[in-house]
Image (tube, rainbow, N blue to C red; front, side):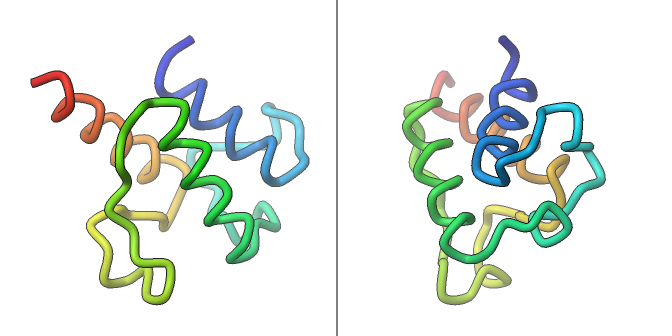
Length: 86
């Protein structure tokens, strides 16, 4: 399973949706993921990839972890995984 597939699966699980309903352009808001769901998604991503997500739950705009779309979350996770293995 690729990073993309795993992240989409985690997001789909948090949104209680089918994986096919999660697109690269989807936002967490459009998927019905609230702030608690976001935090749970971040924890699940950290656990799945053994990374530490630099995320400020109180002010997501001040984070290096872009949560504006599913594609941006995947790109951020890919970057964290690459840095971990560098």
